[in-house]
Picture 1 (tube, chains in turn blue, red):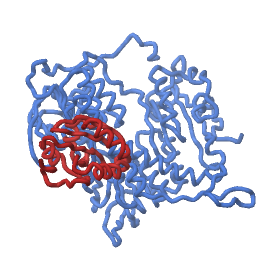
Picture 2 (cartoon, chains in turn purple, blue):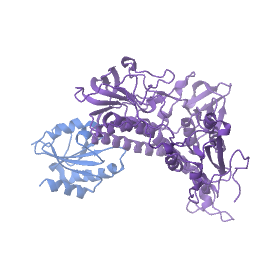
Picture 3 (tube, one colour):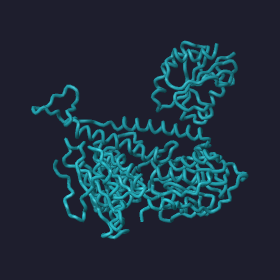
Picture 4 (cartoon, each protein chain N blue to C red):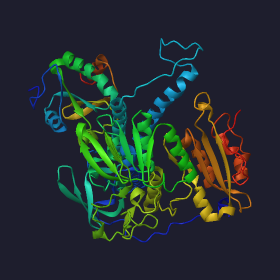
Length: 515
Length: 118
């Protein structure tokens, strides 16, 4: 059924009464625990709607001792530094791969006998990149502190834990304790990297540390095949480090297999080494401050840095949730919710700490705002977790929305899905990079009367920028006809998506051809 | 009237103080203080430093010129509603009588100070 035809039906979020009343007598209407993407958005929205709000944010140092300011994972040790490092690495790589083809050389360098400038060789200074990115992040920390104050949210740089369902105990960095009470609480504490559990695993750093390293990481082993591991491996390799990725089974579990494999192939072609079907069994310190890693297949190697990116665990361990009967999922410690409300009616949860929430900043922000509007603005609108676009910022970027091919087949059956696909060489790579191709694919519901699109996938440059607009149309019931009726912008990579015509079932060649 | 309560400021020079130390200086009546709220990661904050040193030299014992690290003194900066960096707060008799945001040359800063205090 085409969702666009159901516009008269608006789902409502049914919430359990949480006992909140105007003259509750507590210190605050709402105390938000966690000053990340979700927590801050919810706090500011609630304050805007007239609630008296306090936000408690406190960063427990990583095992390496790394700590940071207000803003949560995204701003400090996630999206922002990751994307900036990715941009820096891509910039260096493209200068080296493409500049001379566009006639660019260093001043005074003579072209060869064919009139072609030589490859523009580059160095990349780790400390300069790291310092400039860190300074930018600290300006964001400052901006967020000012932002909370401007919206009249009380910012408390203290670690909060529950004493009872209306009281939290606070500890500041000097160890001084205090208490505040509230009618309602919102837990938005997110997650932290899961440590390596092998012998010597504590010698590894995590994504909490990699963006702050005060010396060049050198030869690096990235353990894990999640997007965190691949994105970090990607930018480190782009900055000419010797990088190896240790993969236990498959790349990017949960994502489309074909696209994930293309990412792996591209990274291999661009110098990243992959050790497959292995896990590290032992890490030990050796001379020159290096780390010797022994793998489960008996091989070993020595690295300057080992980055563990094997998953993230919800940061609920110090909250004392047992004292307030908030149920968590035993597998991942995330808080179980219905419409962001936990098993204790006046305690809510959003973002990475919430079971079932996609671990993405914009999802946490939107869920936080929607919840604040339900709690203080009289809204009944639930958060829509369907059809959320996302992008993996590996050296070749990958953006997708909707179902992977595997999930589409599982849901609709092999005959229920038509795949339109095409491999192509982006124009920006046409002068230089003949060996690397981009890829576009859409999945449609073959049994729907108008070939409704159920998944869109793009592997290639600028994936995030390309996919955003398609997200809007997916939320409004995009069909194959609507997509291909749209006139493409030429010459771009995005136009490949609106001109897809070759189906997988036809067996026709979808590979990038000549002119 | 003493020039400085804490004894930490010498006429003709600029020093860095904590929020608490500045609060002690502010209780001195009839005294002018110029507080430069800065951060180590802020480019314009670095640009303004030699200008402020020049202001201190030129105005000598007519004013106390101090700087405050906003990251290390978050509550003080928040209390004084600092929104952008650098922010120059002109304090007289315990009250902020004017403020200036951004990097300026020493003569512009001197004009700013003298405009409000004749």
